[in-house]
Image (cartoon, rainbow, N blue to C red; front, side):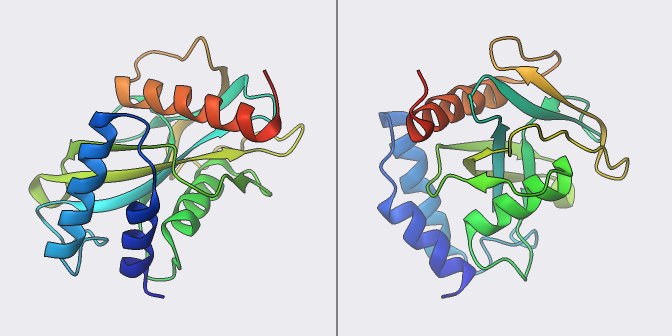
Length: 185
């Protein structure tokens, strides 16, 4: 299955948690139908990206990166690459590369969607498909200076500033998903 077909299948079968997320889900599907290159940076109207909130197994801490270009503490993620077999694989690859944590376990379905403006190619949109990942017990992030200015664990109830509402919403959704998957209250 192509990455494009995988993205369409993932979004077609995903159950949005609320009406706003359902509108985004439908908009992403329409975008995929209109643009054969919807997963690549070359798609100037916007392109799908994949990210993940990395949490510890208790769902109490998350790894965030201080994004080098925009100066905000954010989740891990980015552009799809030709070797990615699926959106989930892209999210896991990005989370692993950016966190330096081996053995991340990605929950199988997205936890939310987020559409945001970015400077790619002089101005475009990221149509981000967002997952939750669970780090192995005792895992510590390893900073790659080429990827970010800083990288650290944070309590999910005390995210650092500056951050943004999309990151906070993703972390909250990931906490709910991880706690449900792990049977943690």
